[in-house]
Length: 108
Image 1 (cartoon, rainbow, N blue to C red):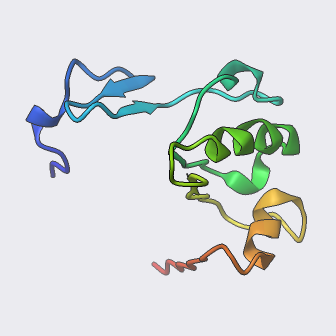
Image 2: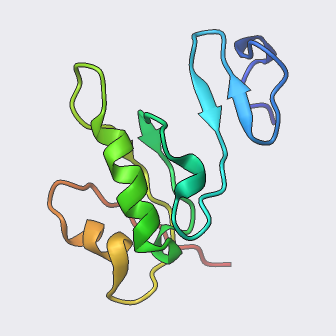
C-alpha cells in the first residue's frame, strides 16, 4: 500500500533525509546520549520513537529547537513509546494537562 504519491518528493529520499516539493524537509537523525549530533536545527515537529527511553539530555537539547518557531510559538512533540515506569520526560508529558495523550492497546 502506498501512502504518498511519488510526485511529492523534490529529490530521491534517503534513509536520513527527504526533501518535499512544498519545501519541507524530513530528517531521521541519531541523537546518541546527549543530542549533540542534532544541535542547531529548528523543528516544527519532533517525533521521538521509544520516547520513554530517551535520555533527559536529549530532551533538553531538542526542546529549545521547538521554541524557535516563526510567528507560531512552540512546535509539536508527537512522542511514541510504551511506558517505562513513573520516571523520565515521557512520563512527565502524560502528567502535563497541555499535552494530549492517546492510548492504544493491541490484542492478538
